[in-house]
Each structure stands twice: as structure tokens, then as C-alpha cells.
Image (tube, rainbow, N blue to C red):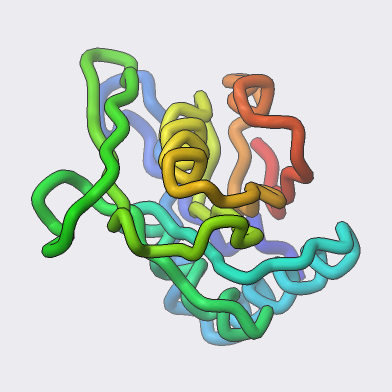
Length: 172
């Protein structure tokens, strides 16, 4: 299946000069969505990843991370924007192109030493993925890999990621 054909390009969004890769067209295609999750699972097995938990970042990481966790017989842990989690949290602030942002995880979200796969819809510069990896360090987990649906290769975000397997299904 050609996943790229199910991803819509929207020029000049959210600002002029940006080509937005819209996954809503992939999500509405039942065969494409099923294929995406199955392919992520297959790639995890090919990389010999042992995964206790899948961590997904708000919000599109939730969409792909939860069914992948189910397929991998793992738990799912959400990483959220500030103020969204009700218990004590670890926080990491990280740089955006024009400013900063912050991500949080419950302090008791994962047992120390858990093997964790980070999943998101897209890797561009890698800032969100790196911030999530730092949160996992605070919790005391072992990062075993990253899984992305889309990778924007020209932005070379993977160069910032820790040295673990990186799975991406579609490259631009």
C-alpha cells in the first residue's frame, strides 16, 4: 500500500512557505489506518524491539501509539502539554522554531527500567521526540526506539535523537 498517497499536502499551512502533511486523510481510510498500525508493528518486530510501554505525545502520538501498544501487547502512556495531567509530573521545556514549549508525564507513569518505544505521527526537527526521551530519563526508563509515520528528511531531526532504532514509514 502506498501510504504517501493517503497523506494530503496542504501548502502554506500554518504559515506561508510550510507544506503541511495532513494525516486526517490517512486516518479516515480504514485499510490505510490498519496497514499503518500493522506496518509499525512489523517494523518493531524486524528491529527486535522488546517493548513494555508505548509513549505517545499529544495529540497525534495518541492516535497511533494506543493501537500499536495493543498490537505489541504493551501499555500506553500519554505525554501531555502542561496542566493536562492530574497527578505529580515531570516536565521538560524544549525549543521550538520561534519560542519554547513544554511536555509532561506523570512521575509514576512507568516502572523504573521499563522498555519504552516513543511514537508520534511525524518527525521534523526532532525537538518533541528529544524532549520526550528526556522525560523518560527522568522516570528511569530504557528507551528502545522511536516510531514515526512521517519523516521530513531535509530537516534531519533524527540526528538529534538518541542512538536507538528509528522507524519511519513515509519520507519526504
